[in-house]
Amino acid sequence: MTIEAADRPKEHVAETMPDRLALPIWTLVAPGLGLVAILIGLAKMGVLGTAAAVIVLIGSVLAAVHHAEVIAHKVGEPFGTLVLAIAVTVIEVSLIVSLMLSNAGDATTLARDTVFAAIMIILNFIIGLCLLAGAVRHHEQRFTLKGMTAALGVLAAMAVLSLILPNYTSSTAGPTYAASQLLFVAVVSLILYGTFVLVQTVRHRDYFLPLTDDKDDHAAPPSRRATGVAFVALLVALVSVVLLAKTLSPTIEAAVLGAGLPLTVVGVVIAALVLAPESLAAYKSARRNRLQTSLNLALGSALATIGLTIPSVAIVSLVLDLPIALGIDAKSMTLLALSLFVATLSLGTGRTTVLQGVVHLVIFAAYLFTTVVP
Image (tube, rainbow, N blue to C red; front, side, top):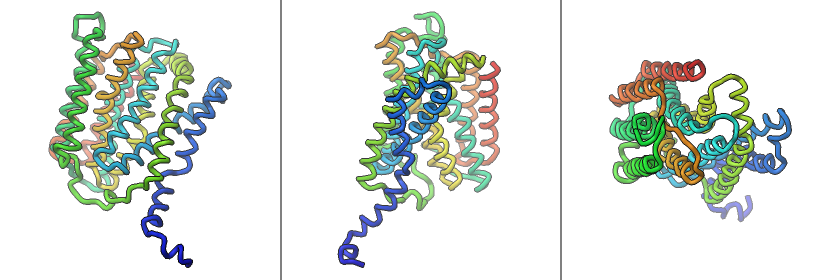
């Protein structure tokens, strides 16, 4: 061993492995491929080109969320969840607005369908899968009841104000808000989400911390170099996602309508695509008996979906004078009420078993079936 190697700080040696583990090669390549696909017009090169562009878009989304998670780990929890929430919101809003600006089909309900789909996926699929997977392996799991009660209370308020109340206002016809009402709901959603974040990160942080100490919670954070690279890659990935979504939006809508499927399916696809990485992370946490982390990810994503996406889409709608309908139909209201009621019962004791997981997954299956076969 040379003198230089012997004198090298141990911290530097320890950081090299996390750097490589935190930034897989594919997460750096995917955003670059996205920019290349945009520059060469890959989406306009026939069926194969469109398929390749969709694959690159999915890779860019996954890469963006991964880099946001790296930055979040460096910042520390629960503050780091804000980074991930903002990144996911940028992706979701860009996909929604791109489709709203396209000329294929009626996209006035796309924001509503995407937000509702995200809530159903989170409350029933992600939470159900985590409860089932964790219970199969650990029989019974525990979590902090106060944090989940607070999150469900905020989620219920924002969901009703954003998705149900528009059906019963009389200023405009149909399931829509007047401009002043839309602005009011956007501000209220931001206030509710901001207050929740304050409670989660400052005032009552202990409500959202795991009950048991786990060695994974103390994993070494990435180095400054890895965090800097992740930040740049995150920006490139977000730009790729926004521009690719704009290019692919007419093709996606035309394909769905051409297959004879309702346009609601587009909202489900967008929500599933955006939530895929967080779903995987929540599932892995539940398998490691860290249900608190899984629920924080799931409900935090649901709150960000309404608290950040609805205001963003509302502002775009008002500025660009785009029509937007937020009110869901009677069938969707029934499923939303059922999902919130069952989630309150499932997470109302601080303990979960396999039964709660199965119930949530059955509700999600009913939502998917009635979406395709309305």
